[in-house]
Length: 162
Image 1 (spheres, rainbow, N blue to C red):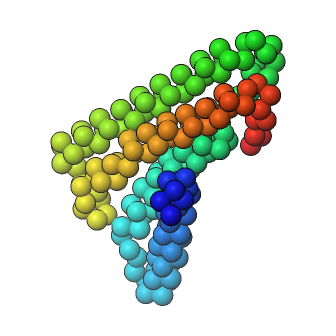
Image 2: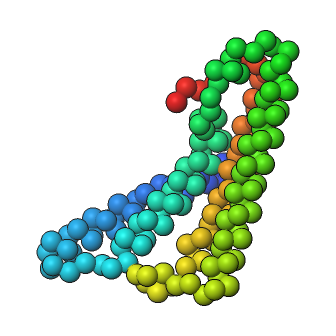
């Protein structure tokens, strides 16, 4: 059971987020048209849900090798250049993701320091930001997992076309 959760963590989070967001949107529409009232926090929750869905979806795509990639140059390279170009690509990608994790951590700490609150529910705004550094770290782990498998398969591996 734990192995399933660790292997499919992003899928579970994305499914739960999407299900929750769909239910919340549906309930809001029913209440709005049934009573002429609206849940003020719905927009806040949905926007931040989409943010989390994007980050965890990116982790899922990175694990499966379906992240955004331009492979034209890679495909035209002779085989001896495949490994150095691949390693440079992995290094640059992990560096960018690490900077994103660091920046989102700093942004969260800044929001926490100034005491900003959300507009709909009045919660501390850093609650919504807290999952981003974790999400970027998860993308790094999943991208490295995929990269390790790609290295073991070598230059003849099949790159998924998205």
